Length: 80
Image 1 (cartoon, rainbow, N blue to C red):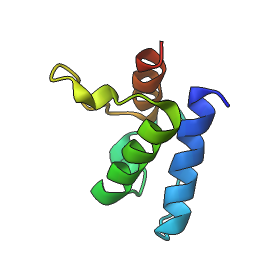
Image 2: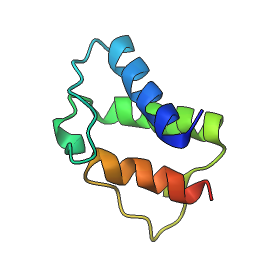
Image 3: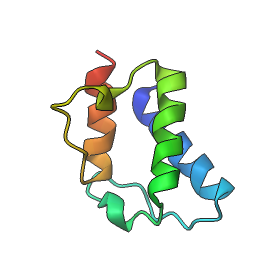
Image 4: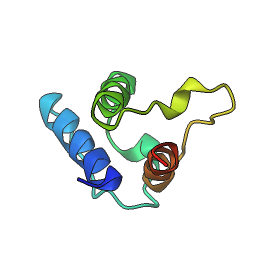
């Protein structure tokens, strides 16, 4: 499974588990408009670390992404 596919999968799973509506996951969708809260994002980040083996937020220089596309690229870059 590609990094993008894994990220999409986790967003969809967490949204379902927490009864959150999830808009289409386009690259330009602002994360603040995803319908997910901070707990959901914490769960997604934890699960992605488990499945992908990377935590792009472990360095101090990492800025939190603003859009879904930036979030995906952060993980794609960390997996290289």
